[in-house]
Length: 463
Image 1 (cartoon, helix red, strand yellow):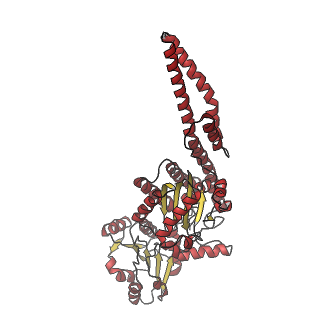
Image 2: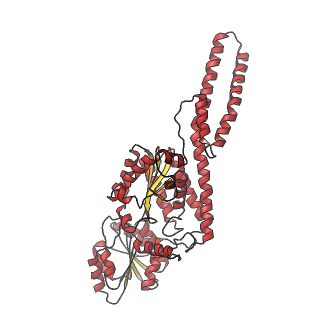
Image 3: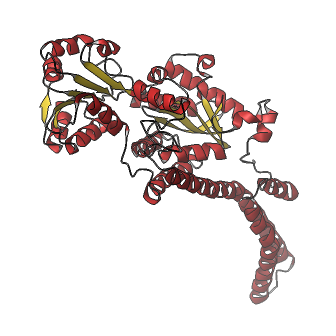
């Protein structure tokens, strides 16, 4: 069994395509069970955010696992595997571990160093636990990733700028309408992103009003930021009264129509409106951007800024460049070094776990042989006194333990070296243990076996 990561993110796909992958909790549950119900996937975790949808899975075949995960992703997007293949990335074994750690640390986010993805990973792991789709293989990987994410933020300075999609987007809004202190702002959505937006706005001195499909949630969030509430039914009037509109709901359809914003703008001639849409799929009708006096900031704009900056070798406005941006190159280098060390540590743990059944089987077989021979001795020498029988038993067990000590210690030590699991194979063959091998491969020899170019297993290699 081996770890596989297959997904699509802002690094490879346009926001318009990412919108097709937007997943509710029910969608994630369905995907999880569809994955573990397939032939080659035994465990699965689905991480779905506004920047990515990625599946981390334990599989028994590389090629079969990629095909099955890709099929589930394609179904979710309403597309074919062939249509998605240019945008899908595949990571295997150590690469998959390093990628998950990088994601958890916020190094693969649109805004490098943001911490929200760590909470999203924790939520995804909790859901997989509830649904019973993570077990012995993925539990330690997910737990290790959460620890690595926390370590990176605690021991490096990658989040010292305190940036997130919310702060970067609000910076864009301020550039359009001016400082937010004392300005009325409407936040539509009271989930985790809405709460982050409302809190950030409050810290900047904005006068926050919250609207949500759940009046109770809107009231709780408004109270937390000393703000007010509005009804979604009164959206045109609520928009007319503010200078900034922030939307971040979990709706699957449009929440803010062009007509609603046009009506609001008619009642506020000469006052510009900044619209910040942080939802995926988007909350705001694309036609809103064409209205006079309205400035829209959304994920597509932020992605375009990032890609444009990278194309021209400039510093991305979102701080997404691993070598520059709001985050210092030294901090990013330190984070990557920590991830590399933690990846090696987990590799050693996984390889040690892989040989554990062999060691256990060997000792169990030896114990059975000793017990059988002692029983045979007891039958042949029924008059042997208890003291002699006890001494013989201790001696035989001591001899066997000493004979097994070196090979069992060595096979554990060698498991962490390249090709180390081959020693476990040899031990099984030599002692006729007859247990199923669970050998995590490095990917190259498996790629040759299934006719895949080993280069396709490089970090970020396309499926």
